Amino acid sequence: MKRYRTTKTVDFFCGRIGLSGDQAASRARNLRPVADGLFEITGPLQFKAGEVISLDETEKMVLGRLECLDKDPAPAKPDPVKTATASFSAVVAQKPQAKKRQRKK
Image 1 (cartoon, rainbow, N blue to C red):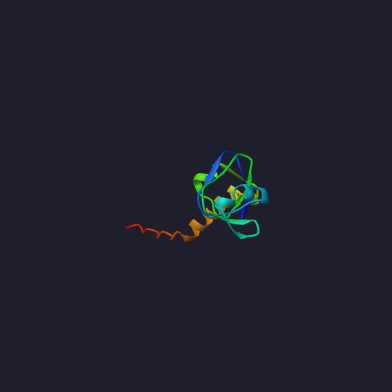
Image 2 (image 1 turned 90 degrees about the vertical axis):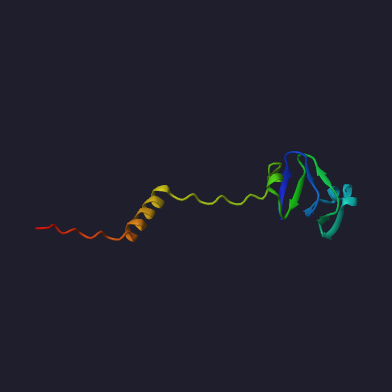
């Protein structure tokens, strides 16, 4: 599960969510415990800006209102010169050689 901080008010209606004890206590009537700190949403939940929650899956529509706290390391950017040279070399190697035309005498 990834941890997120809400940047705006967010509503959830289904799925699984990780909450702290205080967050779960105030929303107990709309949650069913699954494991320690993990709950199944049984009714609508609303979170104000600044709350930290854990989610397995997030819809694209909701991602604009969440800030991921578990950042993955940024992938290394490929060197454009090496990539272009390698691509050009591969194309040249695959291109069939043209037959030389013989001149008519």
